[in-house]
Amino acid sequence: MRNTFGNIFTLTTFGESHGAAVGGVVDGFPAGIDIDMEFIQNELNRRRPGQSKITTSRNEADSVELLSGVFEGKSTGCPIGFIVRNTNQHSNDYDNMKNLFRPSHADYTYYKKYGIRDHRGGGRTSARITISRCVAGALAKLALKEKGITINAYTSQVGKIKLDKEYDKYDLQQTESNAVRCPDPTKAKEMKQLIAETKEKGDTIGGIITCVIKGCPAGIGEPEFDKLNAQLAYAMLSINAVKGIEFGIGFDAATKYGSEINDVFYNDNGTIKTRTNNSGGIQGGISNGNDIYFNIAFKPVATILRKQQSVDKNGQETTFKAHGRHDPCVLPRAVPIVEAMAAMVILNDILAQNTTKL
Image (cartoon, rainbow, N blue to C red; front, top):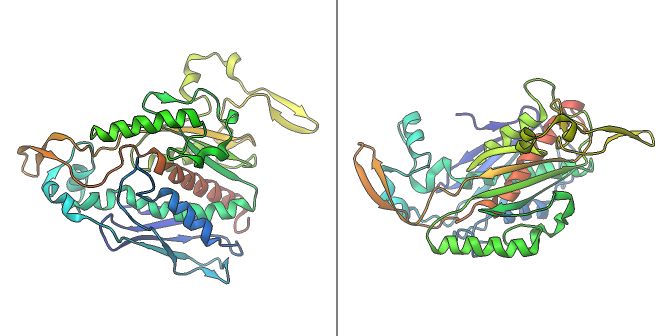
């Protein structure tokens, strides 16, 4: 089981949803970076459960403890170990699901792979494990900040309610102004209402998160198997509930002519630029200096609070109803996770370009 992400800047994670803690070890992080603990904790707060009425009510402080790799407020270049303790597990909520396989969950696949599984909150398959990604992503953001690179994600669609403008028409600083994390206040209200209605029905709903990376220099990425878009896709598809990704105009390109969507170059006072950015900032697997932007599709959360049909470990058909505290829509809490994974990819590739220094 591979629990390590990256090859220069790396994150190795550990822990389960109802275990003692989750945590990780970050290696390859450059020395001399100012470590802003308030910023790191705030990134976790954006992901934490119980932050609004449209998220799970599990009440965890998600307080991070750095164990190594930092001295007098700066990174030392040594591995950064960290831990976030679990304090509010309700393991008994899962007793009725101990011997059955929940629809669209990883219960069956984990059982077939390992012959054993932790049924409490999904164990290692739980989205709670993404805590470690948010910590590592926050560290990566702090390093990228020194290069003038920023990463902002936001909810652009919930169910059939979606934004009707391109990302550059919105003030992305407004994303954190509402519980849905949508930069359009009017659409945010509609999305919030839909999520609340879905929760009331005991159901779940999916949607789309858009991510925008600004300030990434041209020339980042590899030309063959480690294309920058391939690395970002790999990172995003490793997030729980993600089912698809598109860069730039994405699947819309399939209906267009090349003459309609080619990003034409021009000389802007000695700087080569493109008049459009339909490619999403990446061409030939390498960044071209434009904003990198992409959309990620999230399926509805698999746990619904309704009666469902399934089978147990012996193949016997059964009926069950899930209990516990679950998100009716994962998108609001997934926004910082998307940003974290993007930050780790970009930092890893910049370090690869520049070996040991930023």
